[in-house]
Amino acid sequence: MELESLTIDGSRNAVASGEMTATAMAELHFEKITSGDGEINSFLALSRERAMSQAAKIDGMAAKGEPLPVLAGVPVGIKDVLAMRGAPATAGSLILKGYMPPYDATVVAKLDAAGAVLLGKLNCDEFAMGSSNENSAYGPVLNPRALDRVPGGSSGGSAAAVAASFAVATLGTDTGGSIRQPAAFCGVVGVLPTYGRVSRYGLIAFASSLDRVGPLAKNVKDAAAVLQTIAGKDVMDATSSDRPVDDYVGGLVKPVEGLRIGVPTEYFGEGLDPEIRSAIDGVIAGLKMAGCAVQPVSLPHTKYAIPTYYVIATAEASSNLSRFDGVRFGLRAEEANTLSAMFRKTRDAGFGAEVKRRILLGTYALSAGYYDAYYRKAQQVRTLLTRDFLAAFSEVDVLVAPVTPTPAFKLGEKTDDPIQMYLEDIYSVAASLAGICGVSVPCGATNDGLPIGVQVLGKHFDEATMLRVAQAVETGQQRA
Image 1: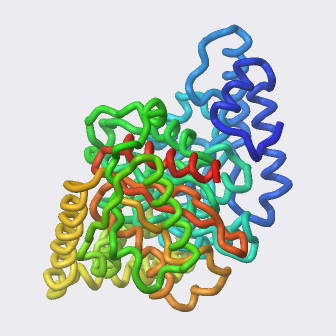
Image 2: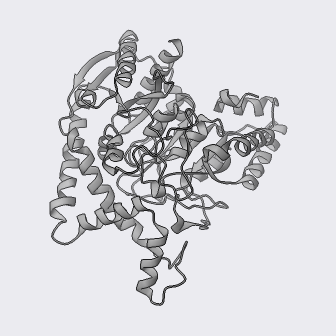
Image 3: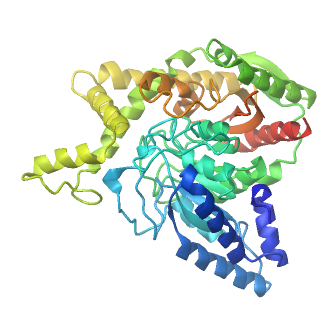
């Protein structure tokens, strides 16, 4: 069996037809991870016992001729910011080294109930803070498409595992672009669901008003199938929506003819790599040929998205990460003589440089005398950014834009310049602030063979239309 071309349908059908057992399929993936991931470093821990138990359960159902669940036997990896029973949850940080959650995140439980075989936990930037996966305390992840390049972040391990065929699909999280950017850099599909569409219960929080869980996969149909599985209301997450979940997979067959495509002019200015612009121009031309109406739209407050994001996200991080103090779980500094010294030494030893930087920024923004000037003002600008999207979506059905200003950059290229690293998210943070949905779809490669992704942004809770357009983009690329 060629793991490189294995899809969700291929996995499930192989088990259902008796062509291959789920146990054998899981073993093949573990063998590939063992032989190939030493260089890429996408997995932090393997959950072999749980995976083989689930595979045996699926094989038993297949042998009895029982109906198989939708993800029966499908090998899946989980980003290490999500709780998964029987596996560590470090969030890529030393401060949580050795922490073993006693429960499953809701999304993990849903995948398990759908028959997925959970292979293990995936590397990520520490507490999901980063755009390159170089901030992990357990070493950087390399891009399987070009080993001298970053895979993107913070869900770099999730994107790399799919690109390297270590897993058929994975879960990542996106706070300001952390699914879409790695998907673009690694040449896979990555979905940002609408805020509230997918439960956050069991997610180690970075910025609670921004964090979202979503799938990465080899193609749009697989990503839609995983999203269909994990979406929906959860009583354990008060921010999850009770709006009905559409048939994402079934909707992919609907034609895109007649849909209105918006092209935001602010996303095509100075700083956009010409090869990326050319590839996206090709996508837009293909959508026109498919019968879509294309028109320019304006998102006038886009230039404020990066500073707004880095006030709100860091403020929420400062609050969320205050719980990691050495008292309840994870790392504790042993040499401290007083409680306050233990707090200081634990946090100093446990947090990496980028996390410390964001805690300091966020604490400053929330401090007395500065709250109104920074955090409150950022929330007001966030409202303006959201109104930009609402106005655009009153005229069009989806937006098509770049995911990143450049292709995957070299390891170490931007680690000494946080501002340049933050600007990698220039086309992704506005959608995060507005709470809308988005997807990154491969749309070609540079002359050096580096993947290029295009971003399709949809209205709140209109993942179905967004995915239809993404499918049309993918089909057009296959024909090309």
